[in-house]
Image 1 (cartoon, rainbow, N blue to C red):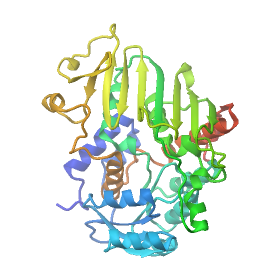
Image 2 (image 1 turned 120 degrees about the vertical axis):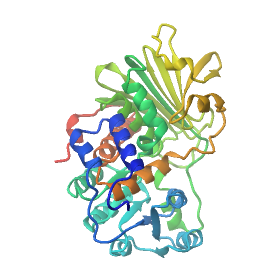
Image 3 (image 1 turned 180 degrees about the horizontal axis):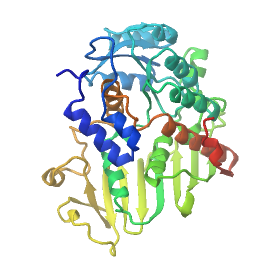
Image 4 (image 1 turned 180 degrees about the vertical axis):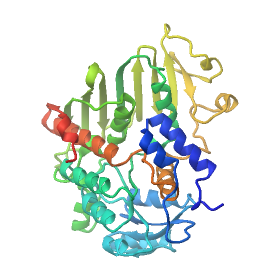
Length: 422
């Protein structure tokens, strides 16, 4: 039986499992497990185009090459050097310099937008208007007005799939942790923390002055969402997801501590999100040190869960109740602490035999799972994406307000009216 005619077992299980974990509504669940959308002709692959062939665009191209259902037919970039590179990397895909050429191509069914953040709005809105399914890299947009316009466009085209690249929501490890947290493993949540450290300037050089300006949009105060948006959005989005709530305020501070090269965008930032009920998420990011890398901590009265490098551990309090299954789980030492390994989709034997510091050669990165979900939605949908327009818009608003607080070294209210689309 062809995938056009009926959802296969793999697709059904993925959708029903995801729905249970992230709390998809009954109406959305009916869409997820119902009759797939009708097609005008037989389609065995999703013909897609990538718009923007910078670092993330190249990573996306390499990833979709691993998904048999996706056929990369076109790559668009305004810079001729990138188009030549695209031709070398994907010789079967045609290369173009104007994204409208892609949108006018009726054979292209879906587009993946990987341009700088501030360019997303125009491309996404036009792509949806032209009948294309859209996967848009995160952050969704460069300001609240742009993000709202994109969310409205996606809302008003319900037969088209619109996914935002908040990849962790599609990743099995994060979905597994979400299930533990929803099941009460933390007890009362008391503190969330996120960190992103890497020693790099973010400044990029080019012999072409105009190209150099374009490359350094993250350092331009008129186009950047700063470290909290461009680096921190995924971790902040995870906190929103696991908290099951939106923050009411954010306190921020930012400094230029190392890269005194004329920039005005901080290279070191801190932000504290205040959620209803007193829960706080403390986030810091720096371009000045690589020590301790990136990780997230979710603490509660009974345990703390750490996610690091797509791995997760639970650190139980001595007075926490027994859960039963932890007796059989792998235990890893972290200085004076013992972490119970939370291994997604693993048997007890698998969990025992894994090296906690080694990369799993069979594990796929979050980007793969997000793009696979996008392809699945094309064939088996439409169903509610794990990161659709509402999720993308809410995370973007929080990131924008956090960036505002950081630039002003202030506390900024996050009024619920900011999340309205009308």
